[in-house]
Length: 249
Image (cartoon, rainbow, N blue to C red; front, top):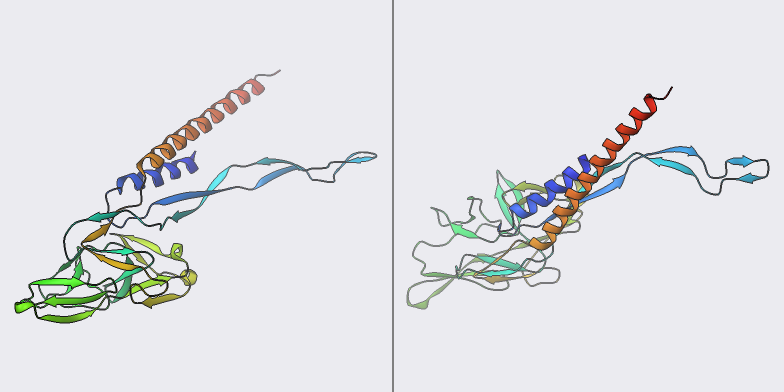
């Protein structure tokens, strides 16, 4: 029953974030627990026979991992020239307390100093500063950032870089669509230009929607609920069986 509670909690979190830009759904994974061996395979059953298979009683299930699905979410057009979507592999790098964190949410803004930051105010890594007299900002598919000034004069502002990891599921979720590296289980961290080998390209004026499929999550929720109820019935039935055994004379 505790395992099914965890399944429901994972499904509920997915549904709660169905409108969170750049959100990646999680899937709860389980494994069976230890077994009580009543009789081992090969145990003597008579003078001239042996058991061909073991007799074991399972002791339940446990949550082993919550695996995050990093498949591409749908493109959501916003028309905002500071909204960026990664089409393919890669993460944006942002700085928080001098630590590089990673995100798929490309909803950027400029702060009071003209720095490109996330909606929570964390600057991009590497940093890019937009001049106050810029009329518009253009970001190429390769991550090149240009400011359009008066008389259509263009000024190069910098280059957005993407990061990729060998094992993305080794990242730890920090909330606010941010991930951090907490162990060597992420493998190699590679930095590259959008559109280069192994990295997706950027789409300006778009955001990546959550990759949550409502119908699939509703089915998973119903299945988890039914499994919880079934396990509850098993416990009640076992209690009644024990009561009957205790009443025997």
